Length: 76
Image (cartoon, rainbow, N blue to C red; front, side, top):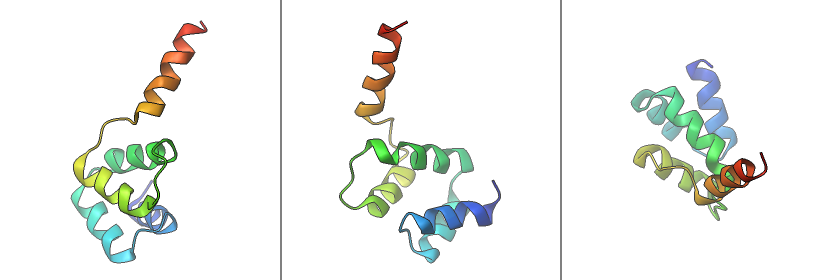
């Protein structure tokens, strides 16, 4: 994914264009994409704000995601 596409994705999720540019310039693509992928598992009331904090703070995987993976392992 190029920088323009990544910025567009962030803006689609409610991040301002200015902040999206800043995030793309400051953080690695994989870190941003990981937090975007985890966003649905965070049950955020303000998704854009949480996404920004998660990218800037390099948050760990949400507990809901971890429990989903544990459940898959038990079924094998």
